[in-house]
Length: 619
Image 1 (tube, one colour):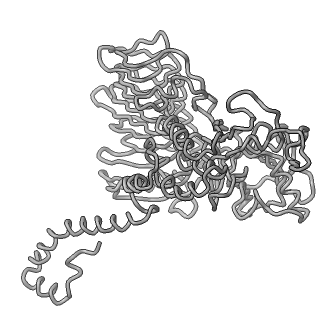
Image 2 (image 1 turned 45 degrees about the horizontal axis):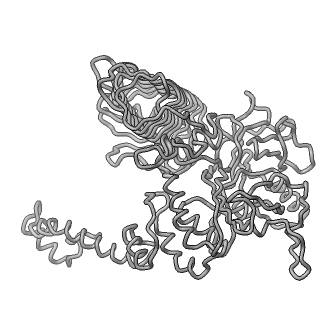
């Protein structure tokens, strides 16, 4: 708010300055009153925000819910709050018992996109001439088999005896747990070096499916379609739509105002009608006239006509993943508030390369708190070496961007990294503090410190291919995936909600809500404690509290690059084994068991009489 002193008429400010130019007494008085005035203004603004469900805080939303008789739900902070549930309560009740309400209800209480299917509408039945049901014929088409057993399958089924199977009393709710993260202006990875016109969409050169980013439905009565939910893209719908657009016979769904895929060659965007969607498992080249590129959304591959090799290939796409762990194009927060020097890297930034920004940093005096911010999601092919003088700190940050360092990062001194995808190793030496947040390191994150110093290594919401710490250090890892060994034999290690897909060695260890897939070796077992974690048999650990050793965890995938990487695959005891009833491991913050419990609680009130609901997690 405006300072109280600035609200005074100018004549009073002039007279006040005349009394004492260096310390005006009236200014000093109003400085004391400024803090209470700001608090009062904040309270008034909060009361005004509380008039509307769209702007009120969560406590007010719950109070409004109590007035409406809304059933209380488990808190899932930052993911699925009560706002949407309370705001739509009256709309739910007006349309109670319809599939549209069940679908919207599932979205509001879980935060996951949903599709409700009334299975009795998909029962194959003998036709009655007074009530003909063309969609319920007992014969199924052999075309379009990619949608079989999916939420969008058009075929009818015979009745099933299982509780949530096809029957006259069943509604099935399909949920998409994986989120789609849209990338703007990513750099395609050439298959060969030098490039020959064949590329991976994934910046690391991995085969990875492209995802539909989904879109928000405008009306509660609208039933979700495939275009509305974060599904892995299929070849056939995209291929058919592009053919129709070329023939001038169809309206765009996938390639409309906000297309699911963009391709830019040397700064010129390829129009959708110049794209061909096909199977590129054999890397075949497009040969049809007018086709500038072939794209395989299932494998995430691009092939250009023979002889066409642009200098730069950029893609706009979306990839699927469980949550905001590791690098990604989402909000992560910028640099520190006490930064004294800032520069930018990327398109429209101060520097075009990281090396140029580092040269600028090297010219800064000791004691500088610096920030190098990435403003795009491009790939930077360079090995970076940074020297941070004693007393200085450097932050490499990428907020809302997904930059890729195709090389290694070596640093001497204190460094903080946020939002970067580092293909090589991240090596720190001579540092007192190394922090890695919301980043992915596909090499080894290694740090070494002299015996006389004590290094602090912090890893939060990140993915690393391994961690190696040499010397005396304090290592804290939270909400992260270690896709390899955690080697810190001389360090004190503190883990909170971590999935370790390798062996673990530490001097002392404290761990809560963690998953270890390989045996642990802890030297000083009289200190520390393991709580609510999975510990493999044969591990040497400090005392344990509520830990389990069977059954072993089952993951959707253990291959980095797959959408279901490090995601628990079943509803076993590990999925509710954390201290707060959530799952153990890196994705505990998603509170998936609590979200499913919220759905079961809410569905009881809005299901049609006599019907039961079954849930299916599509991803």
